[in-house]
Length: 312
Image (cartoon, rainbow, N blue to C red; front, side, top):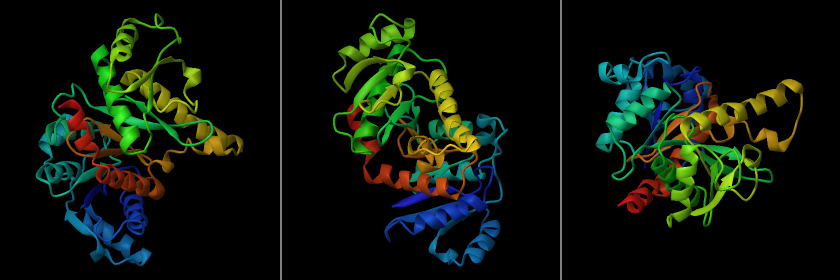
């Protein structure tokens, strides 16, 4: 197994990414190799300071990067030697089994679509994230930003993707899939959610439990929450603020601690032909470590194969 990591992606790269890779390597088994893509000359002093032998890691050296503010499509097209571009080239060629970066989100989406492409039958891939449940564990929320505008069949497919992810990566048996709406009744919502509810109710591919409201997001009985990318991104940013607010107010609670993005590290792009993880731009070493471990879990679970079988 080869896990690819862009060590130049993120606000605190390469220090945070290299230190995160070091911490992840302590957990990975001998047959799980980290492939670090980026400026090796900048990374080596970090290894030396940490007292770690850099030869334990595989390097793909490049000095070129894609910054956060660059246009994703132009950057991927005009910068073939950037760390994100090289990562996707390796992923496409089978040189790595997964690719993760805390860099430009748009470039990660475009790179996925241009290189490994979507699984046949998947109309649009979705970005998924974790939402803490009240007692323990997480629900899966998707889409959280890949598709601001959706059609009903997109939401139906997000239900399939989310259910497969919860089942095979998080070991949820018969995951309960809900549609985020403005009311629990079937007739509530706009044209999109009304039509999507009808499709999801008739679907045999997952366990649909109906509509939920925003106040139900953190309930223990929900495993997957489906919405369009515009709504999902608003929910995600609001949820992320909970943890920072509790820190600022000096409020300590185990439930709100689980809103800390560091605990799950990154958000997978579901529906493409290889595991791809997008990290938070402000990722610290702990977040990078958990992003790498999520990459490993997606490879080990053969998640992409499960998606291919479901959409065949």
